Amino acid sequence: MFINSLKTKLIVFYLLLVIFVAFIKVISLHYIQLPQLYALEASSDEKDISRIKMAFTSKSKEYGVINYDNAVWDDTYHFINNQNTEFTDSNFVTDTYKSLGINGINIYDKQAKTVWRQAWDLDNFSPLTFPPFDSPSAFVTKHILVSEEQISTNNNKPVSRVGFTFLNDKIILFAATSIFQANLTGSTNGTMLFWRFFDEEVLTNLQQRAGIDFTIELVQPSLKNTVKLTSKNVFINKSYRTKKGEIYDVIPLVTGNGGIKFTYKAPIRQFSTSWLNQSTITSSMLFLLTLFMLFIFFHYFIIRPILRADKMVTAIVKHNDHSIRFSSKRKDELGTLFNLIDRLLDGVESKEQQLISHNIRLQHISQTDSLTKIPNRRAFDTHMKKILNTSSLGLNVSMMICDVDYFKKYNDSYGHAKGDEALYLIAQALRKNLHEETDFVARYGGEEFVVVLKNTNEDNAIAVANNLINIIADLKIPHIKSDIHDSVTISIGIHTFVLAGQQQYMPFFERADEALYQAKEQGRNRAIAKD
Picture 1 (cartoon, rainbow, N blue to C red):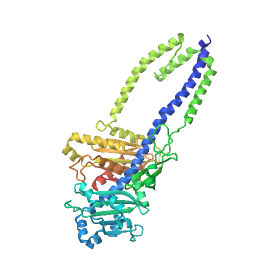
Picture 2: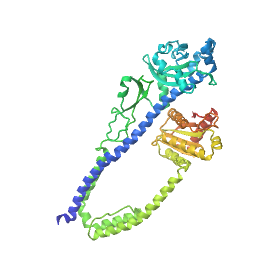
Picture 3: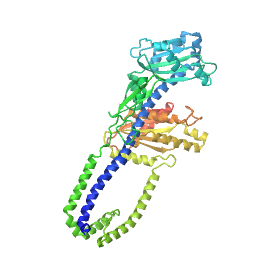
Picture 4: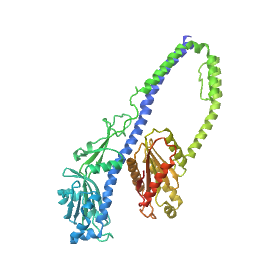
């Protein structure tokens, strides 16, 4: 009889509710919320690491292209035979080293013997020597210079080797290419080597390409396998943060020569990892306060249940909120009444939810491009209005307009079906290589896409744009009709502005469009920023 009293039932119910809520809160935090937050954090960190690695790769490939152009050249090929100093005196002046940003050029014959060499200190442009390249060791010959076996394996075509190495206590950026005639006939006549000391200027350039400030240190071969990505997180393995709040990885040097460890400060974690956090304490205190108030007014809620029901029904009618439920387990007349009201509200809410769900689907369809599956121009318009109206004043915002180069020729050559497929691949590549939390990409129309980067200045926007250009090029979508490349490329116009209460975004869009026009005028497949 005691357990059947209303007072006892309410006391037991609220005690159990306190325990249940606390249990659910802890379980949800440890097994649902924290793993998801760690996974998002790790995904963001992984993208930052990829941007740094891409910066190293693009820098070495850039040297490789320059080196190839000079090695596969008739004048270089004949110089091995005649050693006419007029060739080196006219082509490798000091301005050449300044413009190419290299310390030294070495030319070797097929036996890896030095035919000609010249190196300069880029700080004061005084001559210097570097024995590992001047008289190549077995390591340099095997891992840096190009051998005839490698050329034979490549069907007697030029072979290039680019990357980073460590010689004489210095990290070296190098590019070596087998020397051939320009028409690629005949056999190789030696190897041309371009090299540069890894100094502060190189590091600054890599930081700008990645858009991240990081430091480097050499990892010796004996320590290379001890570099581990550790995490304080016990719920997810793929975390890139150390216990000191740093993120690092290793760029491998030439085989057996160690690696370059890059390290940067991890972004501040935006969530608490402790279950006893402010949110938990606040919600618990509010719940206990509510329970205390219910005990104080216990008599009121027991004696006058009909008045309580009247107020709830009035609130439903006044606010048109059909989600309110009594959810009563009572077996008395009041329980029957509350259950009948709940059944009535279930029917009303079901119809209401169907209408809401239908409207949500229609809204999503209206703001999604059906071809590329990314936001469309209407979604872009909504996004920009939101930034102008809700973002903090003084925030840097960069807008980029991306245009597929010679896309009409692509459609004419491959057909519109292939053109649609190419647009889809490009759109998805852009989406996957941007931060969903701060960045936005949409198809503006035709072969044009627009990217919006919040909290991003012009330098970082240029770095992101160049990264996107490389990523699209790496898709290697064939384009035989392109005037500049054998695969699909994009051009990007950039404009960065500071939020200062503006109401319209089209002036910024037009500036980015002008920058895009300049990028096309300057040869396409590049990014241009315009103030």
